[in-house]
Every structure is written in structure tokens, then in C-alpha cells.
Amino acid sequence: SFPEFLPAAVEEITEPVARDLAMRLERVPVTSAIGAVAGNTVKVGVCAAPPKARAGLGGSLPEASDKPQVLCLHGFDSSCLEFRRLFPLLEEAGFEPWAVDLLGWGFTEMPVEVDYSPAAKRQLLYDFWKQYVGEPVVLMGGSIGGALAMDFASEHPDAVSKLVLVDPQAFASLPPPPDAPPPLPAPLGFAGAAVLKSLPLRFLATYMVFNDKSEANWDAIRIGRLHCLQDQWGQALVKYMQCGGPILLQKAVMEKMASIPQETLVLWGEQDDILEKSNLESVTSSIVNTEVVFIDSCGHQPHVEQPRAVVEALKSWIG
Image (cartoon, rainbow, N blue to C red; front, side, top):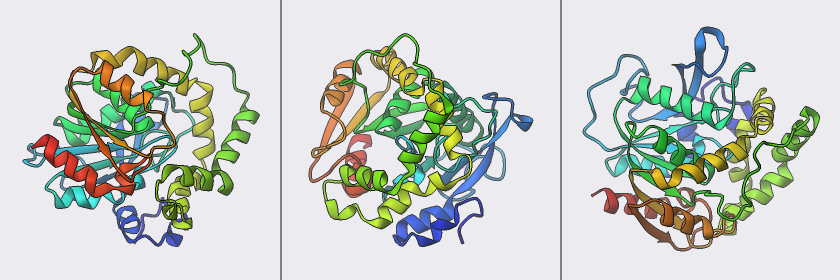
């Protein structure tokens, strides 16, 4: 059955792998100092494999696993259901995958008192890693998740053995960020959130993501929109925008890319209509040890549209 914290609309999803991953979703308590929440604890949405066998999903840190650990970070205003097709294939290939919902997005708790800045997202992820994983991981991030993965890998090299960036947002085609974010009145922010949540915009975004436009169906929209149906989703998104989250993340990536020490694999969908290839060029020219694999017949999310090609690239690269 589905966990109780998921919106009731999860029952409308028909894709079997999406339903399976949703049923495996748990919220686990993470002690963190990201805000004045009760007990300094935030419950993080996570899918782990095997269920409850890893750290803290019911006990203390286990001994290191003999399987490669792959921790997956979703994109902007998305959830770990983004990895619904990749997750079982990683398990079949001998990896031990994690899919974690970033603070303010997905199905992680969204307390009012919490800071939703990129630094807070990074800190909660690191606290989760310390309390539940405890060994270096192959960190995979898609789109904005790739930007957050670069920020995390630079700040916490102890937690990341290798870095995988899937059509990463490197802000290469954007103008330089301003010194300070412009003010965002709350009513304007909530109006923007309502538009982002709307079915027409969700359909347009889903349509643009895929190379195979038949993938842009109602089920894909239901999956991508499910987390927006939570009560606190709007206020968390507005707080992220009000603190200048996009600008702060752009600055962090631009400042830290060249100092990323990990060996890095970049996967790029050849038919990506969301990001310009200047983002790929920025990453490969900044990170010293980088390998690129182009995935044909694929748009902005290779892990959704061509998951088997992603797994084959990982197997070949990791060895």
C-alpha cells in the first residue's frame, strides 16, 4: 500500500514502476540545525534499497556495503519518483541506489520554520548522509539536481566518491547573477506557485522534457505534479524564491565547479530542448576529470526516457 503521507491522487497513477517506487517511499527523521523545528528534526522522503537494510531506517550505521552506493537527486520542484524507471534497473545491475527528496521539494517534510535556501538543502542532505549512509557514494543529480550535486560534492568531498551529472544546469546561458536577489512579495510568489502547479504548465513542461512526445501523457503529469498537492508545498517554494535560492545556487556553482575534486561522468540527452549545450561545455571545461556520454533519442531526462542507457553508461564508467 502507499504511505499515508502521500496525497490521495497517488492512487490515480497507473505506471507500475512509479506505483512500486511510491510504495517504497519512507519518511525518516534527520537531526539537523537548518531551522527552529521541534527537536531540530526534519523527516526526509527517501527510497532506499534494500528497504530498511541500510543505516537508520531502523537502527545504527551498518558495515560498509560491498555494492556501489548511488544516491540520486531529482531536479527543480520534482521528487524521487523521477527515478522510477532507473531505480529497479540499478538494483538489477548490482548497485545499491538511494533516491532522496530535497528539502522543499518532493515528499520531505516542509516545516514553516525551516530555511529553504540552497545551503539548507545541502546541509540537510549531508545530515541525512551522515545519519543514514555513512560511506562515500556515487552522487547523481539531474538538471538543477546536478547543480546541487556539484555544490554538495565541492563542500563535502568525504561523502562523494564519484559524481554523475545528468543534463546538469550549470547556468552557462544565463547572465551573471546580481549581488542581491530582488525582493519577491509573498502574494506574487504564491501566484507564481499556483501557475507552476497548474495543469497547462505541467503539461507544457512535461512535453518539453521528452524527445518521444508520446511520453508526455497524463500519467507522467500526475507523477510530476503529485508532490505539489501537499499543503505546505507552496509556502516552501515561495520561501526558496524569496531567499534568492536560484541566484544563490547559480553563484555557488559558478564559484565551485573548478574546485570539484571527484571523477565526473556527464550524461547528456542529444535532443535536450530544455538546456543549451553551453551548460555541458561549462561543466567539461571547469571540472578537470570529466567523461561525457551522449544519449541518443533522448531529451532532458535520460534517467526517465532512456534508463537502460544510463545504467550501461554507469556500469562501463565505474567498472
